[in-house]
Length: 153
Image (cartoon, rainbow, N blue to C red; front, side, top):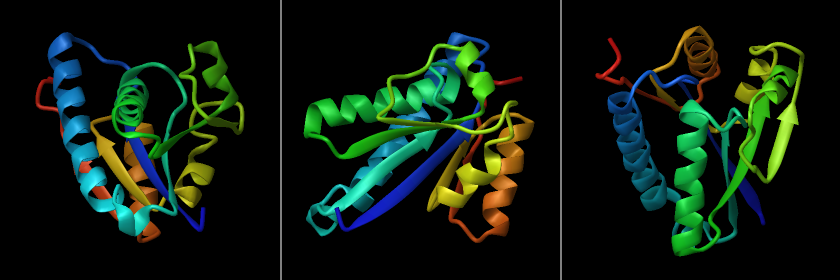
C-alpha cells in the first residue's frame, strides 16, 4: 500500500433504546456510502483505508465495525479495522479488530494518540469524551463531521 487514510469515529458507547440504535445504524450506513463514493474506487486502489474507533463491541464502535465488516464481506476487503482504547477497555467485550492499540489506563488517556492518527473524524452523538476529541480534531484542522441522534432525549 502506498498510503493510508485513517477515518475515525466517536459517539455513544451506551445505546439506551432500539430507536437510538436504529438511528445510529442508519446514520453510519449513510456515512459509509459517503466513504465508499469518496475512497472505494480505482483512484484509491493502492490506499489502505483504516476505520478507527474504540475497539469495544458496544455502541458506536460496534455499529461502525459491523458496517465496515459487512461492506468488506459484500464488496471485498476495503477496510482495515483499527481499535484505539485505554486499557480500561479490556473490561468489555472487544470487536475482533485487525489491530488494537491500548494506551493509558483510563478512558480518555488514548484520546491524544487517536486524534494524532486520524485524517478525518465522524462524530455521532456522544458524551464528554466524544465532544472533547471532536474539539481536539477541529483544533488540529482535521476535517470533522458531526451528526446528532434525534432519538436521545
